[in-house]
Amino acid sequence: MEIFINVLQESVKVTLFVMIMMIAVDFINVKTKGKLESILQTGRKWKQYFIASLLGAAPGCLGSFAGVSLYIHGMISFGALTGLMLATAGDEQFIMLAMFPETALIMFGILFLLGIIAGYFTDHIVKRFKIKTCTDCEFKQYHPGEEGYKHYFKDHIWKHIIKGHLVKTFLWTFGALLVVEFGMIFVDLKSITSDYTFLLLILGALIGIIPESGPHLIFVMLFAKGLVPFSVLFTSSIVQDGHGMLPMLSYSVKDSLRIKIFNLVFGLTAGAIIYLLGF
Image (tube, rainbow, N blue to C red):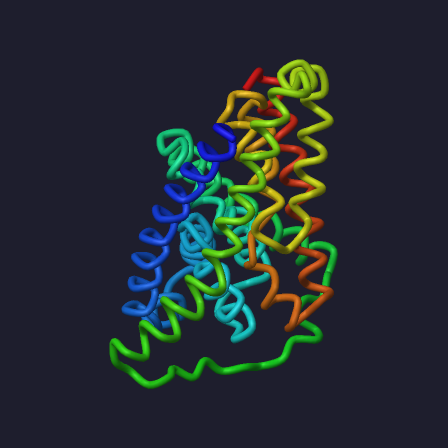
């Protein structure tokens, strides 16, 4: 019962922190909507990789959704979108900031830089092998709704953040913490995770393919408890993209699969290098 109460308290604390962060990020996103398009239309292509990766590195799924919209409208390349999805780790980024902020910020910085590099190389590979992208996309415009704080609270805070994200965030956080806490009592998790670290790294990458925020949380909790090294968390974070891939799946299944394949390769490669370096 004590473990249950402690896990419940920690889950509520993390969820409240996530809510505050989500509202802040969403408010910034609403206030700056439309300005990114004008910036991307001028200048060199490297700007696409930089901005796309920056959108991905920002906590939450809003940057991913914006990136998909920019891609569908032809404002960023396939490589830029791939780099964006690599750089993001979805809603789990808020939880990482709540549980180990310093390590989380370092990892977000690395993912941001890696997203830029991955974007460039992905476009180079696509061009060299003449891979056709966005062949089955649908052109869809963004139509802003009515303005006002009442509309913002109802549609953004209540429907999107609280109903759409926070309930799932709480349940996944609570479940993942409960599994880890009880696992440490009834199973020798420390021994298992140390003996099969590289297999967990591969498992983290494979689970990262799932286009959903939540499954990745088990690796966040294992890392927070010191049961897996940074390389496992990092690999999982590269491959997974929270809810970011869901709107892309509705536009182009082919491109979504291609992005996942690219990021799975990038994730396993980068994760293996960090693992061999002893992190």
